Length: 197
Image (cartoon, helix red, strand yellow):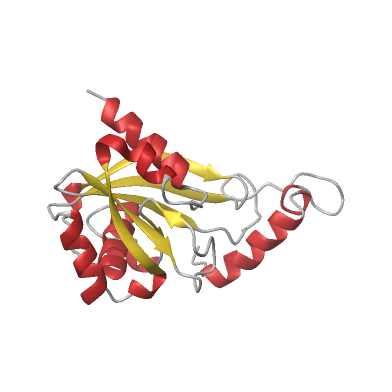
């Protein structure tokens, strides 16, 4: 169902303040959301996109103080809410959201066949369904950073963008400081993908 970040943020705040609020009804019975029950919760579906460049780097972006969730933390690479414009396209909604986010936040285009869906994840603290996607760009890290600076419509969502070496990603992430909460499972999904023959 269509859900905006604003409505989901209120729900997330309540869940983080009192997790029992999202699991039990006032009479003590368990809350059963769709599709198994009849409760429509204002959660959002999100794609966690990792950008891998042609020069074997992974893009990290420091989130702006103006974003609603995890401000000023480093993200490996970006998050995009799935919305109505992503549904009903030739590709699946998560691939469409990843491609749209890459264009909006970095000013770059990417064909659907360059997006690989790696794994699903449930963010327990937010009750968000997420898909981790790998975007294999034909651009270098420097080209993506330049595009972000010059043409990205939503460049305000980040204050800094860097390319981290793929072969030493752990050290690169450790050097950044505070990370977006989902950056760790993105790193793990990328590592598992690299290990797959």
